[in-house]
Length: 251
Image (cartoon, rainbow, N blue to C red):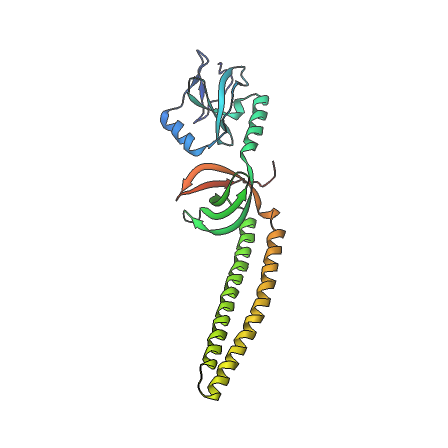
């Protein structure tokens, strides 16, 4: 391929001026790219057209960065091409392929953090992913909604515990009143059982409302917590790492 008029870029393929061949990156650089890039689904061999007029037969492998694309020739050699060097038709093709990497994922619950807060441990659901994953670049507005959900969940859990406690108190007090003792003792236990039963009934009413409010809030915020993500290919502490799109504009 001819390199006339093409600027050189660090980390990208350099074009030879004598034979027009693309010079391969070092093994270390290629490995670094493979670790950093998100793999693309199996692609077909195609002709890449550079603005200089040179061409190259290779298949799309990954997107190491927003400004580069990694391709593989038929001989297995990997190259990193700056997208700025490519013809407009190829750049349009890459934009379409890059968009396919992003998946709509519903972030249902925020569980915690990992890697000193760099990742958010979340429970998600979607066509291509489900269960617990680590999320990088989770939008702050999504995190705020998930924190509100978690507060509501904590209230529900605490109220459930209170109901169980009231039920235990009432049961024990009734059993004590039936076991004998003085009249004053039995009356005192019965009164305690009655109060505990009343508290339990009130708590159950509150729990029903809390659950309804929580379900309504989840439904209302479902769209706001559905974001575009891509699998980075990394695994941290046994969990896959996904990354949110910096701009949540739908592709």
